[in-house]
Length: 446
Length: 166
Image (cartoon, rainbow over all chains, first blue to last red; front, top):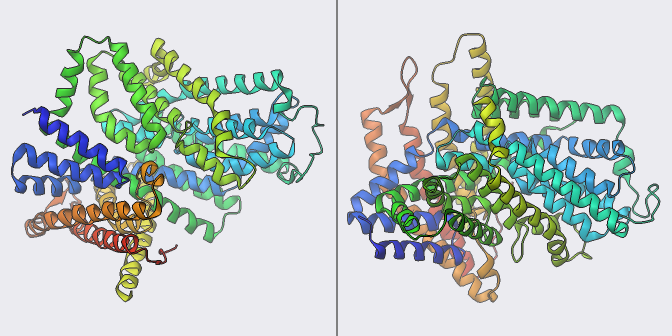
């Protein structure tokens, strides 16, 4: 059934529509329809596949995990606990060079354990940490690079929406993928920290230089003085309890990821209320999830349709045999895949990239003999690194929009993010060289 | 304009309904975990949640379209002039109408059959009917097509219509 003409039409159509800015879901859906029609020649089959996929593809307990984890993250974001934690870290690390950048990276690492999306981390830390760093005379680029760079951890450290989508697309255990992200996430955080401290030592002017640590120069650091110690402890305790209950419960087999997400959302709701969230905040959180979760789920539905089409038209096996017979070494092919992700990451959002590429790349990588779990982590790192690069790095624009500082150009943030995505590319090489970084924890438990 | 208002009201109402429903699911799951821990598992929870996902997505679809939350790559059209950008966007929305109209139409027969045959999900004591989700696919896709039509007209003629806010 594999026919190079059909494949050409489908690939060109899909890419053309996506580039023209057609909604990715519509582009996937229409391309699948055309593909199905070209292979089967029967409109009836196209209609039947459309109807059955929309009814069945999402009718699964697993998919509820996405809105529920988002709800959990929203509640915690609205509880004000992140500010408390940022303050506490800041106080406890004393006189480290680049202290505020260090606190941003550690804070982002902790926040990553309760949020599934990088954008949320970037926006939150732009508002909390940037005014602080600016007031202490940090280089603007250095400050924003630390925020944008460390926000990438949100997708690597569980719960991560990207890992859920990856797990669904490749039919792997989401719990296992969650666990696989922990060590690479910590490794990335450690490398980010090393860079931030190193940069602050070598060029002290980046991190406020000779300015006295307190009081701050301008704009005063109201955030820093406002939080009493007891409040900080409640926040840290609460967040760690939620993380332990949700991830612990999933990993020790007490419940499924969906149940963990449901319990986590309920716990986070209680926590946010105890920290003073009111009814209006609750509604805002619920609606915000409604607005962000639906487009992702629709994309997943269209991706299911697209995978079925790929399978029926034989595109997947066609591409696979093309590469397997091309005589290229497995690592060359892998490098090509990472390159494609990195480039796509510059122009479209992470989830769309995964839906477009993973149904083709994953079977290919498995056929080449790469470890599936490590490959998932590599893929997520590569896609996320693209979010920091010009011309359209999404995280950079999020940071720019959130800081509301007309004196900082997008370009400046892009330049100071470079070390962070270089570190992520180094991380990819490390994980490929030592797949155990990803596999060690999952192998202990599963 | 009056029709747009009616459609926007409907779109927003369905979205609010679905968002609240998704919120209620977390308590539903909590109840399931607790009852299981007490050795009295609730029947059919998984099936109800599975069908809820389909319902919620199609209830929210119209709003996702109308509020321009659907994901897309805008790097190319961002680089074009305003007029070209509007026309290309309108073309994209036109494709949206086509796709969701076809989907709504294709879903009609299976929904009717599902209703007539009493299609159920799950086994044992509690069986969850599947037809409500199937009808929701028709309604949600049709509403998505209507909203794509609104967006296409707005872009093509450069009209200024308020987006429904929450």
